[in-house]
Length: 293
Image (cartoon, rainbow, N blue to C red; front, side, top):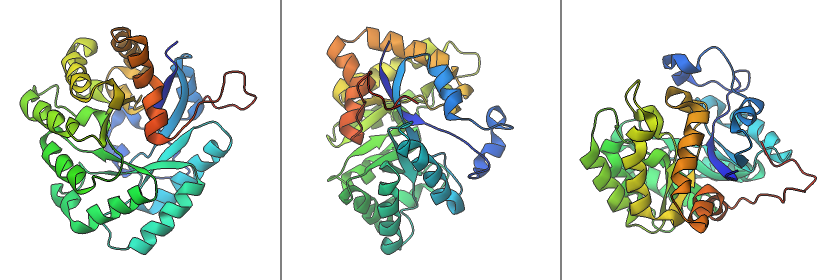
């Protein structure tokens, strides 16, 4: 029993919100992905979960968050990381959205950046609005490709008074063998104490048919060596993980990784860091509230 906090759980209900990008991913078409589905796959290894926005279409950002807010209110999720569009020059609208998101259990916000021009994160408007998110007490999850980790570093340096989390180990191109630019970017980002990293998503970047555990091992090792176990959180990336090892396979890899750490280090990666970074708390096992997803 690892007692994980899943910091990157996607849920999809097409009646609630639309995600245009799903049309390009056959593995995720034709069905919804529910909290009950995820719980069945967790196998007792996950003690609580934080919803991660699913690159929802802009028109449905609030609809998605309000739906998830209901699950948070019922104790089925620990919190949520909401979508936002910091590139828009309307601080009043962002402040309004932040205020509502806080009532919906928001612990952070995210803007997917690998689907927009690379320079989006470099505008003064974008950076000022990310800092507004930080001043509101929310984290900001950074989603960059391996080739743009220099831009992630620039954003982090411009937003050095808040908590940032780099998603998916910086999205390494494992199948393409692009090690050097990714590894150097991780080393530079790890030198910034306000930047954390999420152990998630990496099996989807391995080549089809690869031994996932072997393929991701050097990347996970570099992340742990660079950031240490005090700034790493874990995420399932379900159901996108189905494009790689699948959730049971990723849990098996996680179990092997944690087994090589000390008990305290494993607990930090599994759940303690998530509690500190996102401000979430697991209820005691004998609580009458249902906090497990």
